[in-house]
Length: 322
Image 1 (cartoon, rainbow, N blue to C red):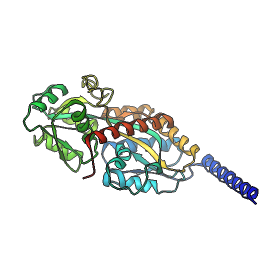
Image 2 (tube, helix red, strand yellow; image 1 turned 90 degrees about the vertical axis):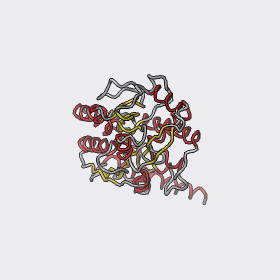
Image 3 (tube, rainbow, N blue to C red; image 1 turned 120 degrees about the vertical axis):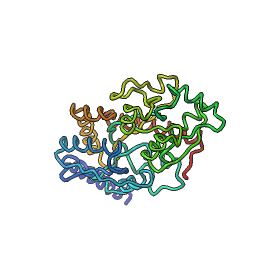
Image 4 (spheres, rainbow, N blue to C red; image 1 turned 180 degrees about the vertical axis):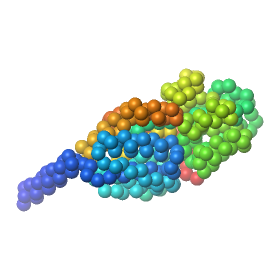
């Protein structure tokens, strides 16, 4: 009896594997949905649309962007986590997909229900102050904040937003004296800096570069590991002597757990090809976005490193949901 059950189980597994392999070989046979957990027009959305256009050409099927903003990426991520793992629903992921479970009291899905597929690209975060601020670089800004009796006001786009993590690194690693002022979005934060309601914030390069080039904002540092292609004059925080400040507004692709590996590999290859298309590269870089692409393995490694890095900031700052 036990041998019969074991045989039945093996036959069932073999049949399931064969069905999955067959589906992967013919995939895709219909349009693919890319769920973006942000509103249209932001860095994540723009990267998603570039990836969708390129992947559509590589896969021979429409790749449709579906914006589902809300709850700091949780709403869109939950939709994908609970979708059928058939290769027709993917999430355009961001740092929040990694960090939400670290700071929220409860989550409607488990992190392991989403698996990394591919990196799309990233928009380096830029630390900015009003255009007439007296600091010429990040070192001077941190020193001035320490001398201030009340510290400097730092705008964020809410708990666990990228500016919140940048602030956490500045305070816990380098002793900056900063007082958080949470806003509902990055655009509101930038408006607050433009109006000198707060001393500083950090925001995606694609958002702040027009203000920097017009002189309305002053850039103190790029918070990624490389200079921005569209603004190479700005040095990185690492170059300025702050090696722990490595953070960006990135976009990748995650899939529901259980999606066949062959489909994930095919999707990763399509996105990688899209991010290497000369027209796409030129378009994204001109806006301040760095196309990345790469393999599934490289994105799995990146997500693991991001989880460890952000987890360290959460622990050091005691960052919790509002």
